[in-house]
Length: 388
Image (cartoon, rainbow, N blue to C red; front, side, top):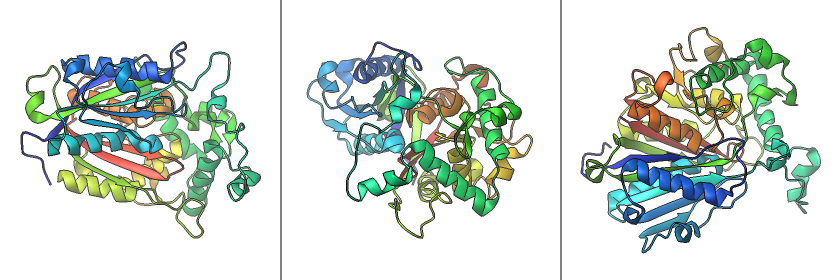
């Protein structure tokens, strides 16, 4: 299905706060700042906003009260959403449907988080040591499979055992994304790394080395979704929302599943591309959720950029990924090297690329951009197809 009416959804504004080791603000304050920046970026006023979709990260400190913080009145749409790293994509989907249906005209989708505390390590933010689950909930804890690092490492190890994927192949992704980040002034980590650097970095949770794991960041990102008709009079070139889909496998802690081998991208990807009327061969840029190198690799397989089980060989092929590579993937450095704003990381970079505003890292052919979001431990997935 292709959108052809004046109410076709577009992304007309993008707001990004300073991100990384930024202290002194709450997640709610970051979210409010990002919203103001996105609205101004579109050439709108806060008074023009009649819809607000909010999401908080690990601190879960962004709720419906953001409406009051921003002095927004008489909203037609107001919802707090949570599907973890797939939330950003899902918010854009719901906002797109709402503007298509005439429920609202200008909807802001915003994410804010502030897990980093000055003087404390990043690992503290995602530790659940303060919780003591009981009953069946305590069974998993007794195995030591508690943190995302451990749980995703199990998924990666299964992929390795099944398909022969290697640590060096995962490292090729880390190296390529750092090369992209070197071109991105917004990136937290811009110093190039080599495969040897990856292999020599400390083990976080076998088989993951340090450079296989994403950053932890404070900050906020917001986008403005409106109609194509409204966007004609606004400041920025509109980014069309051509296709969308979600997938929620529901296999957590179940026996005989395909955990680690297949993700929700295998369902949401084809559905979103079908809606947009395109195939994977038409995609110019892929902004994939990369909480770990493995997540990007398995998503490449599930979206069809390569055959299932061949992701390791694919990314390790010279000239395949990276700034000079055939496949333009995670062009800002992704969550591994740029900044970690959950699903807003791939979405924000996708918007910049589709607009042609990515500076030194701008991809020449940028008509169609695929955006993925992954939440939980491969529990939730969202896909967007955006058009310039």
